[in-house]
Length: 93
Image 1 (cartoon, rainbow, N blue to C red):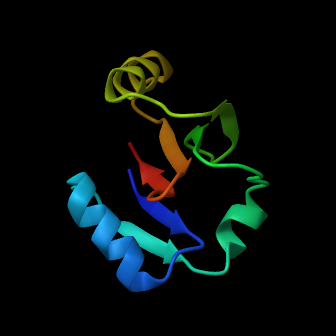
Image 2: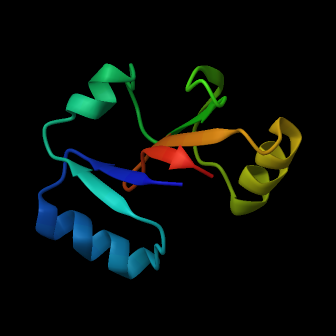
């Protein structure tokens, strides 16, 4: 899993990541270019991708760790997650 913090300054994004205890890599999408490319109109959003990087499920709203575990297990080992929620973005779950 990889994260992208959307529309925040780098310092604010890093502060949020530290406070939230995020342990996966996080990038900063300061100008929302990644979010716009993915069609994100509100955050948080979670995208589940297959091994070919095609979106197979899109969730509007927060997703719990239990839901991520359940949904990635259902999809099998080739699933990828793309999350648009300060923080988060794209990579293997």
